[in-house]
Length: 318
Length: 318
Image (cartoon, rainbow over all chains, first blue to last red; front, side, top):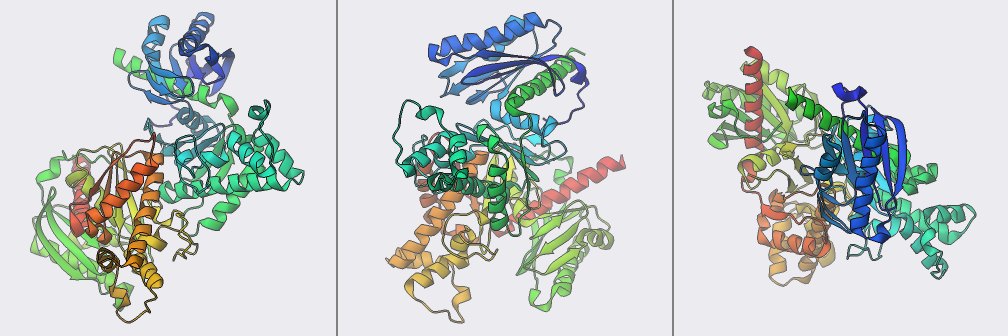
């Protein structure tokens, strides 16, 4: 699946939907351009049947509002069966074997595409964002979890079990939700950066704790809080270490940092770049850039998928 | 470049050459079958001009002995420009900007191919060896260095700077030849396994030291030498750690262990498998197998490259 932007369907309006744990972003897209954007609540606290219905209803609403759209695609978290349009499993949303796309096809009558949210956010960045013009890039999403999208020779590596760099052992000495200790996710996600800081500073958990994350830690670090500086330093060094491993293995020209924690901007890019400078000797040194499409990257990626399914549909109708 | 075995040129005889630091293996190949095999000394101690001449002369000798061959390919270590057939740099052989393949084409008149030795040993294993039938595999060569060949969706990732998993930080605490410390190569190559053992056991370097390697350490470990057990244990755990990172990122179905250290057989496979069992939770668990083509894997890979160049040549001659 090349990143090429030259589909004959480039001008057609399509529907792209990114279904996440908190909200569903639904867009009408022409190429990388967002013509319309609607946000619907996922309401996952009401259970998986409800959140699945929310996704399907958001699709139906978009199709009714914009009947001149020609294809639809959905991106979701978790393990997916992209060929059959089935969500195999999402721990976060408790979705299991949900035949999303056959349903989407039935209710809208449109050709459909199905993909993974982080991987297609990476495809969107590679096609329309920071990665434009790079044949080999790595999009790293650092948020409540850490996962990546690998673009190699202009193609996405679309392995349903791939990109889980968040579970590389960076010897953090901390327990990870996956069941073992030392993982990058145990020290460098928004919640775990705050968790380590709170532990160092002896801050007890309160009802507000879940709201705190990397932003609060970075702010405290800038105000001279040495525990916050330590937590931020360990997080960025660990991210650097995992990225150095990725660079040694896949040698990308560009690393794109996305996800909530990437809002830290140069405070994130600079220590990671410094780590890579110190660690890489003979290896190719990639450029480090921030993602530019923000929280709509996954939805824009869904639009790319929708156009691909449209192109395939037209080909097979010839 | 698919691993497919269905080239129309499958039946044609081709020349495959693997030029290494000690010897040059030159073979006449039909598919994965070795029809003839000649070994020539590289004689690198006589300097790069001499070793380059050795490679070209071995090619010429094979072509004169087997004039009915239809294509030739060469695989080499280091950084290569495969498109133009130029060795960019080999630290080991002191080769720099050697236009091997234009020369090979001139002296033999045959269509030529050019590739990296470890990567095409991996392609050979994926096509004719342990990896047959697997779409996603990783061939790890563990010898005097450590590098890998990544097969993703039946294609080799042929990045000239890729596969350098030997320089992943496994926190060995030991200096690596690349200039930083902690790399997998600093603790898990043949020489470094022996080096760490010798250090633990307080053995001083002698004129014989360079001859000792993983084989001697493993043998001592089996005889109850606790320093040898420690060195072998750290090496296999470190290999497991690097492979666990690879699995989290690229999720192969199969890992193939090759190179000199893989002669340890189950004494290598078992501790690595146990490490992966203990470390991987939700990830896909790959099968671990030993390479089956031995030290001719690179040469057989060169044969695959030769047949590709032949197929291309015939296509362009139509």
